[in-house]
Image (tube, rainbow, N blue to C red; front, side, top):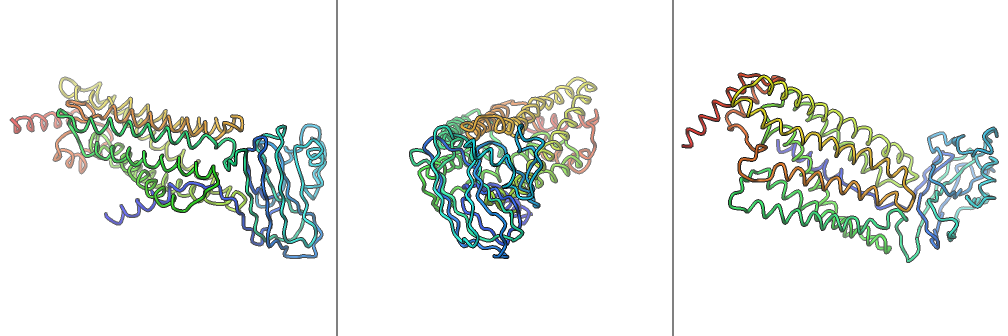
Length: 466
C-alpha cells in the first residue's frame, strides 16, 4: 500500500511541471524540412535576437537552400516528419499555383516578403554560425513565428538560441504579460478562502471530518503554488531565470496535485459520504481513469519542458488533452449512472428510507457543477485561446480557468462545510460501510432491503449512544 502511495506521489510531482518557455533548440542530425523554432507575441518596439552556432550538414557539399523564415500570423506551418508545407498556406491569390520542391521557391512566400509579413534570412553554403537582430515596428505587431526551412537532402545539426523581448525589457509574450497579476490575484483569493475555512473548522458547533482538514491543506498548498507561479512569471518578465524558484514551485505543485487527486478519489469513491452507492465496478473504473489522467499530465509536462522545435513536441502536446477528455468522460458517465440508480431507488422507497435516499440525491448538484467545471477548463478555455486577439490569447484563458477552479473549490467547500446535520456528511456507521463494501456495494442498484438495513443500523447506533 505504501508503495502505491509513493508511486502516486511521484506521478503527481511529475504531472505539475510547467514550461519556462525554453529558448534553446538543439538539432542533432535532424532530417525535417520545416522546423518551428519559436512563436512570440511582439508589441511595437519589441525585438528578437537569434543566434545559430555549430551548424553543420551531413553532406557539406549539398547546395540546397537553408534559411530562417520569419512570418507574421496565427496559423502554423505543418511540421510533421516529412516536412511538407500545407497547401492551404498559399493564400487566396495563389490557390492554383503548384507547390515547388523547395518550400522557399513558392510564389506566395515571395509575396509575403514583398508585403512585409515575412522575412527570410538565408544561410550561405558552408556557413556554420549566424547572428540576427530584428526590431518590430508598430505595423508589425502580432504573433510572429520563426521557422527553419531546409531544401537540402542533408540532415542538420546545431544549436539555436533566441532571445525575444517586448518594450520595457519585458521578456514575456504579449499575451503572457498580465499572468503575474492573474496568479497574484488568484493567490490572494485562495488566502481569503483558507482563512474563512479555518474559521469554520474551529467553530464550537462544527462537525469536522478528516476530509475537511485535507481540504484546508489543499487550499493552503494552492495558495503557495499560485504565489510562486506569480513570482516565476514576474522574474521571467524582467529577464531573471533562477533555478531557486523551481525547487519550491515543484514541491508545492506536487503537493497540490497529490491532494487534488486524493480528494477527488475520496469524493468519487464515497470513502466518507456515498460509499454504499458506488459499486466495485465503478471503483475499478475510477481507479483506472485517475492514473490515466495522471499519465496525461506527465505527458503534458514533458511537452511543456521540450523546446518548441523538438521532434517530439507536437506528439506530447496533442495526445494528452484527448486522454484527459476521455478520462473525464468516463468519470462523468459513472457518476451519472449512479445518479440514475439513486433516482430509481428514491421513487421506490417510502418513509424514513426515502428521506435517506433524498439526502444522497443532494449529490446531483455536485455532479452537475463537476460537469460544468470540466467543460469550462477543458473546452471553453481552449476555444478562447484559439479565437482571442494575440494580446489576450494566454492570460484571459488562464484567468477564466482560475476563476472556474476557484468557484469549483468554493462550491465543494459550501456543500461539505462542517456544520451540524449537513446532509452531505450523514453517513452510515463504519461497520455498515465495511459490509456494503464487501457485499451489497457490489450491486449496481440500491434496493429497499439496503435502505431498511441503513435505517436499522442508524436507529441502533442512536439507541446505543443514548
